[in-house]
Length: 100
Length: 175
Image (cartoon, rainbow over all chains, first blue to last red; front, side, top):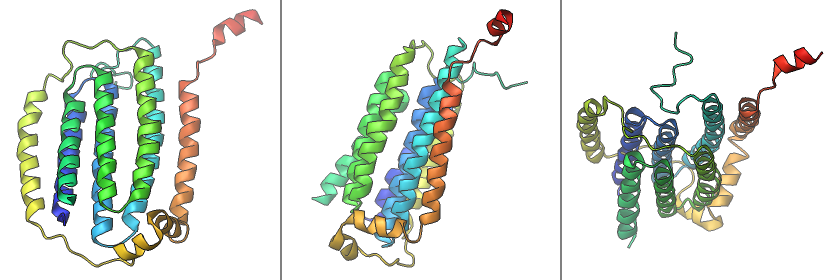
């Protein structure tokens, strides 16, 4: 029997990897991929607690998170396409259209 | 046996996560994210959540990741020489310190709480899909509808954002 803390440890490690990706990478698409890693870490946590505490609510929230990740990917990639069409670089430190 | 599978899925998903963050070429990053998503779905199987396993494979790998790969290959990004932030090294040290502190606390804590109403025997009796469906369409119906509205808004927003803008000036000259 795997202890619950093992699942939470895996989830914490994945979340920190995703957070590092958001902070460290310059490419906007890789930043979005890192956000997906963080969402997966949260999903592991929710499903693990749902299994060990014998409640179905965790799996439902994980399902809603997957749906929200789909919407976020669609809108984020649309923003990337718009930015790339304006011949702006997709590096996050050179995208400063909204800065004043 | 479960321990072997758990170790395999956990280690490979962490390694694939590290590769996703550190690889240079964006397509390679997306492909290692594919490996991570498949192994996370393996962890879901170990937790008796086979419906979420199917949703993970179909929606995440089949839809979201394919969308990312499509946009990556559409834009044909050049790989930069300097693909990390300048301040990457300043973030790395505090991140490792904070991660080890979080892991130390996680592995020590007992994690117990009030049990819910669906133990593993109930889930295994009719299957996970049945249990998720009964719960979703009884107690969580409002959230389900909200997610539906959200997805509709996201679809409309993505279409409006990515549409080619009309050339207003040429039309004005013509008239």
